[in-house]
Length: 133
Image (tube, rainbow, N blue to C red; front, side, top):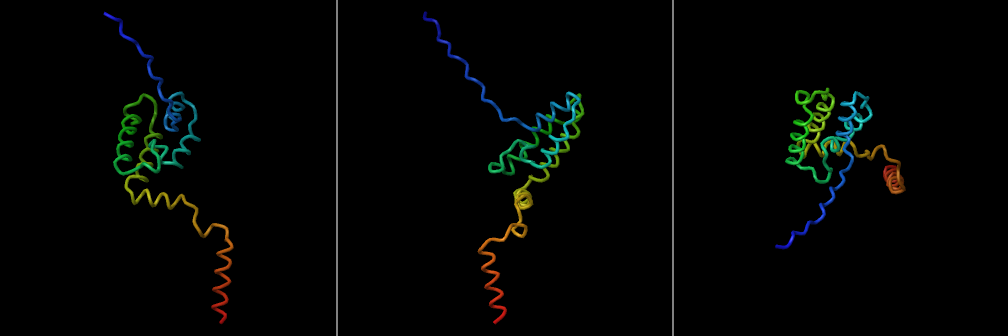
């Protein structure tokens, strides 16, 4: 009987660096993770490990549940309270499509703060001319 051919094992795909895992590692080692926690507060999508384009209600809920079980303070020997709170905040911000839209509007630069363009100046001149006549 011929010997079976053994194929090489496929290499594991490299994962993107997850800020939540990095913060957890620092907290486990007793190091300061303040900068990473601020990064998680600034980007709830990164906190939940989601892409803003692919996040829907079910994906947000699934990611939250998975990470909440992993980083719950009662399940870890190290103090994971800060991470768990960051997860709760992220889930609260992205839970529904209305909240995701509101968060996106918050993050987008407002038009009133933007520098005026030539079109804005032209329309302003036209309005002043109409008001003067």
